[in-house]
Image (cartoon, rainbow, N blue to C red; front, side, top):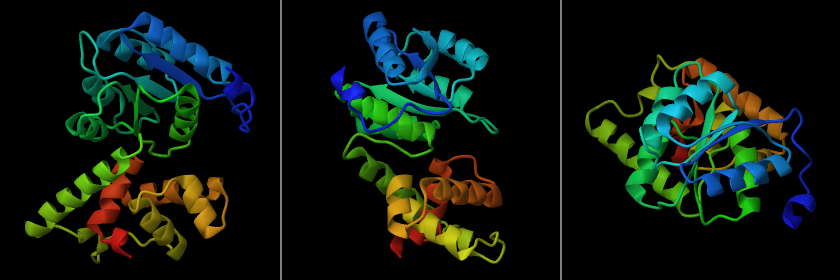
Length: 236
């Protein structure tokens, strides 16, 4: 793959470990080969849901590239079982389905991103890199869908009198920079875009996000985005 060899991105150091789950052997093997050629360490593969859970628990990959349509156990259930409190696993769904219901269900189950199988090898490689870094990655058009759903849920919470409680007196105190980063997260910007906007390093953005997650007792960026929207930070 010439696009991998010519890529401006260096091999990941330390190597990111990846597991690929898909019930089509040829597709699964092709994805695994592309990721290995790009510098990732493919530690396991699986062809059905129960096998995916067992092997992921044993191999403990950094990133799980997961199809939704799996025999034995649906992909969303695999995601729910593996992405639990205290888990550092990040899930990138790679699916043939672009149905809005599938996208939202995957994100609610704990997936970090959602990529269509129509994506090229270069897009997949970059998506895995970004997923490993904690960035939400979506096929163009789907990110807006997810943010729209968060806003809808936040609006329902507001109608029930619970919206924006994040800005209440009991909310943990965030620094000015943490609040600034959180506001940009709520607007759907990637870590790279936030770093460029604030003229800071990608690592500094990650550190601010991790500190904020700890202060707010949240587990992942999906929860963080919803928190920020409920606090009205996406409107600033």
